[in-house]
Image (cartoon, rainbow, N blue to C red; front, side, top):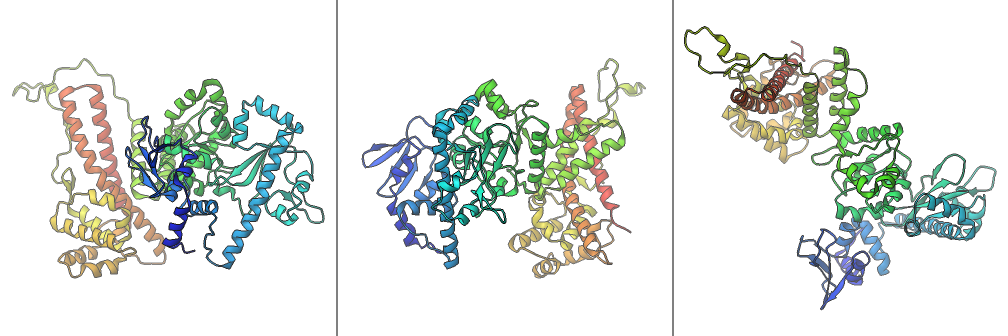
Length: 627
């Protein structure tokens, strides 16, 4: 569809901005404008102004600024098109349709919304009637007050196969079936899907009823029943309570993900309004995307039983490939057998918030889960732990995040399996220069404590050089796609040879300016430059013992290419990390020589072990290709 500037201007002109904002924020007139406490940051003195004549709002405290559409996207959390559609509906304007088929589809969806809204209204009437007394008593026992019951739109489906069908008889039976309100079985009359259940409306991001969840009253299975997928409702793309939680999250800078809608409602009753829940399924990629639009690190707070913890780990696994810098998950760990409702009943909102404040980062959750998965007594069991952890890291698509996860797991493994230092005898004072000829070697410096100072080593604190830099650049010339994927890491590298550094810079610039570069394309860009000859020299030097420096020949080219790219990513990670580790090792050694305490020794030995592990990884990469 095409929304012209003229059409959007007309839409803004028909909306009274102070009225729109006043629905969720208390506004007061101040001359020809209105004032309010800013909803985008906490303040006690109003600095948020609304100008109806000019059609914009502005906060002098946090600089929030926008019009009616921006208000709907920033404060309500709607997409641009959803904001436009909602404002247009209020203003009595028709949103241009893309084509007749889209218009027809939109009309049909609107009709189905009338059906489910009619059902929601009827369910509410039933709960308020004399027949709803048992259901109201159940809600009272669950601690759900009347204001909360009405805010969430609770209703009641009578234990009847035709009561709803009769109440909505103005709608065709086919529409009732398509909306999920009736079940159609071949050879039989359609009948009510929800019977003898407490009804909870499920709303979209704009607050419109699109489906229902029903909890059985009394005994029976299933305990909870959701609407089936319909043209209005895709359970994998909807989060319960998103319409209410999204505005609140902009003030709390937090989103809590719980297992079910009763958890959401219990938290709301306790005054915690920024919770959402998936709808009977594991958290999906689409739902993660919705959550990350609101906050970069949502807190998952699933039940403390085995099923809840399995659901938390499924969410963690689902999130791994999607992680990117700054965006992750945190996990609040509840006591065994308890759910959010139990916590707020026993400890109140403050007690629940305290659990949220102690939430584990995703990396720590994965580590704790795998360490607790089995014994770690034998070398084979320890190797299996390492394999599992690095396998999780390899699921991450973003190269920088993947690299840091691998390093985090390696550091934890080094600490977990570090050899215990033997008890030492009373320490003698250390002197750097013992008297010549004294023969007392006890007071001399221990050569094992010295930092790596061998100038022949090509990866040092000042940068990388020699055949390591040549292998890196040769591999990047063969596989230019690795340039964009590892751009941030490569820019951190210090290449000691000026001509190689210039060549690498030209390659990074080329990859940044043009996507999808292959080897030929990259060489074509470099050809007019003075670095071209050096590039060709490195490209022809295929005798270096790394998989990414060899020509891809033979039948299994695809497998060899995948191996080479994986090894190249690993190689870059080592080249970035090892100089940093050696710098820290030199500092730790110097500190230990001054203090000679156990803590300094442990830190120095840990860094030495990390440096040795990186060296072993380099050797393994060098041996990963034939020849």
